Length: 262
Image (tube, rainbow, N blue to C red; front, side):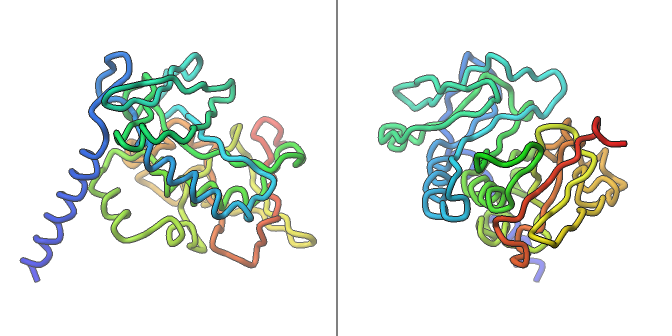
């Protein structure tokens, strides 16, 4: 058994190295150790969104940049798609979101999507929003699709490549996001006081251990934060019962912001 365990561990390490080496070795503005993502994987996320668009029929997919370390400005950020023989800019709008176009050359050259920021100073998420919702309200189907696309696109940033490799080997996006108690971290627009699910007459306030990256249930949070892309946005984070189908996709997710709370 020890030999089998050792062989398995070695395979996982090789998998992690291969996963990292699949990104093209190019950067923006000579920035060392950039926080870049695979263009090919982000297109896979776009493909999944199109296949599952029925979960959020009125919404559009955008990708979003978020700070991870204090003092990481996202204003005037320069984002680019970079291959071995080309590069071109990607416009980022005021809310730090952007879209990608389909480019066969970028696919052929296994291009990267790279901002001029160092690794671990920022992170990425999807942004899928049904228009016309009330203020401080999201739709559960949109957020379920955000998880699916985010995992498929490889957006979650973590400093531990071995753990990422293990998760990739054992679970796909549907499995991970289909858990009743999925631990996919969502980021609200502002610091949150409470999150409430509303479906018709049914109403449920999310417990405190589903907010703030589970800080109330994690005495080792300070030591864990460097391995979480919530490092500087803990007060905006929350989990949802994504795999609990008793909550329909049209369930409203209502926020009470910290500064509005009594």
